Length: 300
Ligand SMILES: NC(=O)c1ccc[n+]([C@@H]2O[C@H](COP(=O)([O-])OP(=O)(O)OC[C@H]3O[C@@H](n4cnc5c(N)ncnc54)[C@H](O)[C@@H]3O)[C@@H](O)[C@H]2O)c1
Ligand SMILES: O=P(O)(O)OC[C@H](O)CO
Image (cartoon, rainbow, N blue to C red; front, side):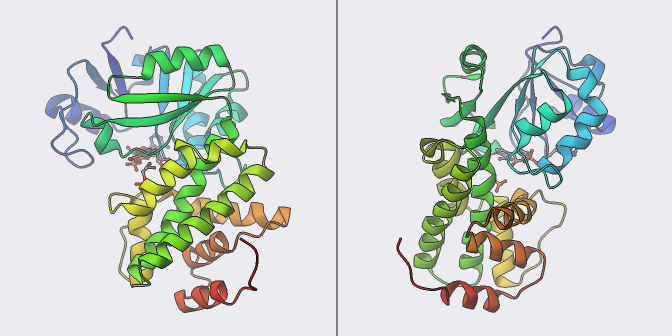
């Protein structure tokens, strides 16, 4: 990039100025200084990089591209969001392609808290790209000594792994918030993973992809850490505590999208269905629990 090592674009000019001056995002990443080479701007014309990482909430991706897609037409785009667009019912790479048909697009996903990466802690992610040569180039360019990127050509599988784990993380949080015990959390994670596989295979994913970083890896992280917003939201749902509605909780919209997708395909996804109903306030927690436990006994 002509401006420096990297350019951080944000839509709010006042925030861009503050970040440039303070060299720290004291709200989202307190105590982590912005690296020297990073320049912050709110002017998209200043974004001249060959590779652009899009890291905004899933449901904002379409509106963002409607406004700024034209300026990004000649760049390589790397989607970092985890979710399913509620209108198009597809993941972030699909949404980018729906706006910029011939774009060079990849997906960066997997178990990672922004805070861990910003502090340079060891992290491994999936770099999914249908174009092998582009995937190899991005893997080289985006890996660092502490950030290992593993290539995968199964973009749909990687998108679904990142999206679906958030729904199960909400359910795992509910078990903790409601005091249902660690065994219940483990049961939900394992049966939730079976639901993730069921939908992903139906939508064309490769079975191995879900067993990798973007599915199982991220499921373990998100269902087991208070640092996860999806998990914390589930804890609040389970305990009846208030939750800040401004916090990004991707699994809430994704649960609704997946429940619709599953219904349309006749797929049994009871945990996802209950999370969607809880999120929408259509069911109480005792009702959700009773419905899950009363299901007919079956093969694993
Ligand atoms: N935070 C993490 O640890 C982490 C890790 C891996 C993946 N992700 C994924 O990255 C995506 C973004 O998450 P986040 O944690 O950065 O969320 P966030 O809510 O902390 O930040 C999102 C940013 O996007 C901006 N934004 C929202 N709508 C916009 C729009 N229409 N145009 C331009 N900017 C807009 C917001 O102002 C905010 O700065 C999510 O899909 C999340 O699942 C997050
Ligand atoms: O805070 P969460 O729940 O959005 O999780 C962040 C990342 O997706 C974890 O890999």
